[in-house]
Each structure stands twice: as C-alpha cells, then as structure tokens.
Image (cartoon, rainbow, N blue to C red; front, side, top):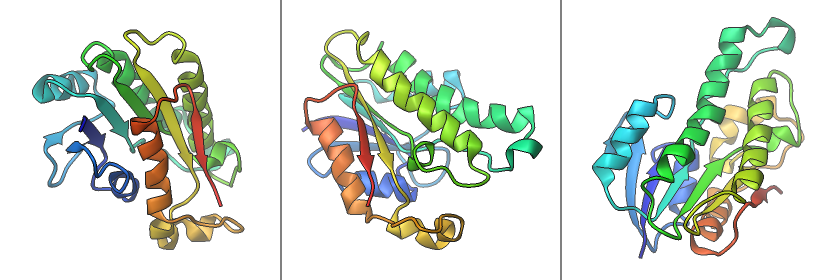
Length: 201
C-alpha cells in the first residue's frame, strides 16, 4: 500500500482517479471542501506547506488545472497567464518541489487533456497548456532523481461531466470515469515513466 496525495479529489476527474487508487492510502487535497488538506497549486508556498504537512508520501496524483476559455482574438494576456499559472506552472511546481520530498521510487501523475489532440473553439489556452504538460512529462522523466517516475493522463471528456461539456464538444464520445481511473492506476502501480496515457473512445 502506498501513500498517495490526490489533488482535486472532490472534482469529477478526481473522483475518476479515486476509482483506480483503491489499494492505497489516499490523502485528499483541494482548494476547498471536505478534504484532508487545502492546497492552491498556483502558490509555491501552498504546495510546500502541503508536502510538509503530509510528511511521507509515495505518489502525487493531480487532477486539477484551471483554464480560461475564450476566442483567441479576444483572449487577454491575463487570461493566458491564469491558465499557464494553473494548468502548466502549477503542475510543474508540484513536481519541481515535490521531487525534494517524495519517497525513493515514487511517482507523479499529472493531467492534460484531449483538446491538444482534438481542438475545439474557445479552448486554445487549455489545448496549449495540455500540450506543454505532455511534453514536460516526456522530457523531465529523463532527469528525475532517485528512480522517481512521472506520467500524464490525457483523457477525453468524462461521461459524468457530459452534461456540462457535451454541448461544446460535438462529435466527442465521452468515457466513463472508471476507465480514466484505470489510467491513473496504471501510472501509480505500474513501472512506466515519461508516458502520455491517452484515454479516448
């Protein structure tokens, strides 16, 4: 049994990840709500505080990354920076700071998303930062110390979230959260590293 920090545990993607972590001691974290620890991944201080409070841990699974949605021609620098600081730098900092604290042979699992492979209107910032995280994971896996592994789950829209996102994703086939949970399970319990685990219909 591993001690796994699950960030974004109360969200739809967090709940999907949780279905694949049943064999482990899961410590929940998020920006608010009934979680074990409050954390804001856009704050380096908040990330450091989380790791210090948890102490020993074997894996970090992140399922959050806030993105602004707008037409490219109307999107402001502030909207770009909001997305970059959350979906991209927030996740990079989870790894950059976390590699100092995680157990030997531990693992990080980040989140990207299918929109960098199948673009839709208004999602340019989401697609761009998802692509950046996919690339980050492939490259940083070659530099991770102490046999630490890192992967990213790149899922399509969840069936459980179709009511919210379905209208903006015509032609997409949603997948059940349990299927995405298997991708997180493979990352945490397997031996792969530097992999983009695509979950699509």
